[in-house]
Image (spheres, rainbow, N blue to C red):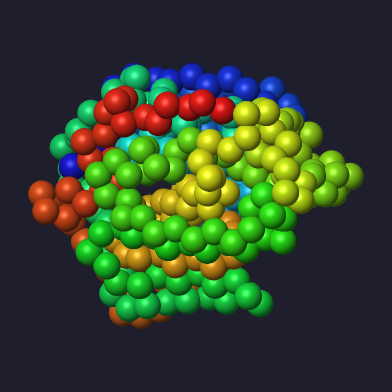
Length: 307
């Protein structure tokens, strides 16, 4: 069944790119509401921004949503991944600025807050997007593909020249709490040269060594090092789940990403929905619903963070 939070959860922080302070309140919402952002600093008629694939607009280094009135909200991927990973179908996200707080650079603080609130089943079934035929987009060496599968699977490969990252590959079936146990605490990452370039362009103004993994060559500059040996590829999978959740429901299929990022995952969703016969809405029953990411998740599934 669809689900929502039992009570509102408040998150205070700064935007990764803007550096501006922001307060975000994630509230329960009724069945078939989906996930909607509400900019509380804007006039009511301009404030609602649906978290859907066709509201994504081009942006550097994050996922950016815009409504028809031009209101935007950015860096939504971590909170969207947390909602999907906790199986939360419906939420109203009130936010007093244009960027979601970065917190520690992962989805773990969001997950912790949601599970502390509690998640309640609602009275309508979950509708999932079932992949029926493979679709793919490419850009140079980067690939993003969706293939048929009865559950939510993900394969991701990254390859960086920096020895601290290098080539990493990972496969996960994201059913039954895998996201919370394996991915949610993995932080965004970048190279020191990327930080310098972003700041020169007016980005990453809220970034610190505490809310991102920064590497230089074979060194991890962030205090405490990595939370996982393969934390970078895990974070790319976290991002991909958040971006796929913009489909409007869980995607039952196998996602394959090779050097893929936010823009490519959105292009992939657009390709999926534009391809006749490649997908269908399906109503989840007790069998298929048991394969969704948030089924049976409890606070005990949260990883113990040591860095």
